[in-house]
Image (cartoon, rainbow, N blue to C red; front, side, top):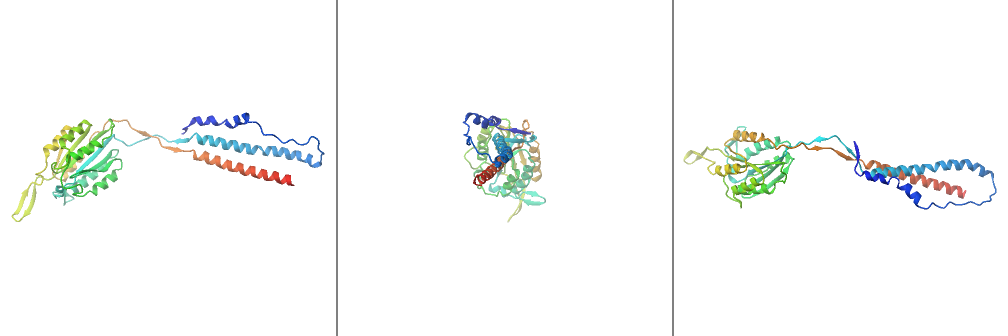
Length: 336
C-alpha cells in the first residue's frame, strides 16, 4: 500500500488560490474608447475566443505541476508486505586459544593428523555455518585477547577469519581471563537477548591482567553464560632417542578453572580428547534453546517522491515552453 510520511503537506494545496485573492490583480491595458472599425476587427472575434481557450492550458499545466509538487513534499512511500526476520534472540561469541600448545598434532580430520587449531577451525566452522539467525562473533586470545570479529549476522566472514587464524598470532601464552573480560565489555544492554560464550583452550591461564574466575564472576553479573571446552588428547605416542614413549599432551590443561568458569555463569564444561568428541560437543551446544522472543517483522519500504517530483519538473518545463511560444507569437502579431 501507499502511505504519506508528511500528510500535513497537503494543507499547501490551496495556497495558489489564497495568493490570488490576497495579492492585488495585475492592471489590464485599456484600449481607446473610440476606434475606427476595420474588417480585420470583426474577423478577430473568433481568434480572440480561440485565444481565451488556449490560455486555459497554461493554467491547467501550472495546477498539475503544483499538485505534483505537493504530493512529492508529502513523501509518498510504498509499504510492502511484512517479512519475518530470521532471529533467535541470541548472541554467540567464540573464543579460541592461539597459544603455542595448540600446534600439538593429536587430532584427526578425515584420517589425517592435524593440530588442535586446525581441528577447531574445521569443526567450529561448520558450527558457525549452522547458526542461522544468531549474531556470531570471534575472539582470539593468546598472551593477549583480541576481538577479531564483533557480533554480526555475517557468519561467512566469521568463518573466514577463523580459518585465517594462526598459532602465535596473539602470543605464545594463554590469557583466559582477558578473553572473558573482553566479551564482558562487548555485551549488549538488551535483557531479552541470551548471550553465550564458547571458550576453547588447551592449557591454563598463564598471562593477562584479569584472573579467569574473577572474570567469570563479572560475566555472571552481566548475564553471560560461558561454555568451556578443554581440548587435547590424554595420551600420545612420542618417538625419541630412547624409543617410543607415551606422554600426556594435555598435562597443562587446567580443568578445575574451566569447570569453575562454566559453573559460575550457568554454563557447562566439556572435554574434547579427539575430533569426534569435539564434534559432539558443538552438536550439543547447537541444541541450546534460545531466549523466548517475539518475532520481529520488517516491512520493506520504497520512496516514491521521485515520480511526482519528476512529473512536476516536466510539466513546469512544458509550461515555460508554452508561454515562451505564446509570447513570441504575440510579438510577431504586434510587429506585423
